[in-house]
Length: 305
Image 1: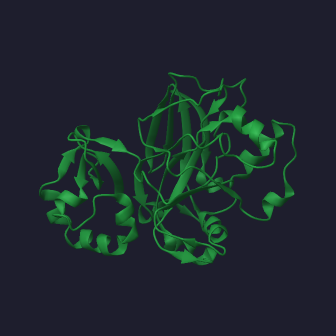
Image 2: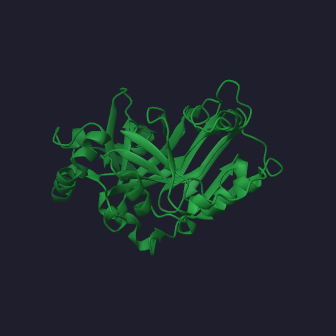
């Protein structure tokens, strides 16, 4: 299923799902209040709610609370995650980005999957405007995929981690490279170079929908990025070095993960201007439109202001 958060014409923000790629079902309205209004509440008790949906599917999609897609405005599918960890899991991206700065590969990168925490309160959705930070001249996009945790767990082993994943979505980890470069010279970061915006969407796809694309411990999903309609980045999720299951194992070591936490993959190879180089494309400027597309996960577009 494709779960979404959307705004209705009356301004109400609701959670629901896309039906037949034409309609959006307001889960709260269509269930007469049995299902919650927001996606985080749904995730916290999704096993019960999914069972209810499966048994009441016909009722839920033929009664009230069903809208045409053009009647509503899609927002970030999970606008208020409990946390956001972004990993660094594609070897090609790490190697190339470091080579472009005259640096060798870090041997320790092969020892453990590493991540940083970003601002979980700055989530943007499809077609939302991204404001370039003050004093930033090197604004960049990052082509990533994210998983959303659907089950509480601690010290989770990689071989069991899939049962803790609810679903997946596209992720754009916007980066102010000049700010990031300066702050990371101190040996701590990134922080201010990242915390102004992260885009996710357009929907959160339940993990069962990706099984047809499975390749060993990953998925055969083509990942593309365009700026102003011009293709710049192309990779595939199956090229990832650390699986999402390995990331979850690392993230949950000594720590409890909760439903509604987001885990990002890091940038796919060639998936940002930092890696491609400014001879391929300049840094992003106001007026630019960035579109990310991933097999089965849709398209995520944002414009820079």
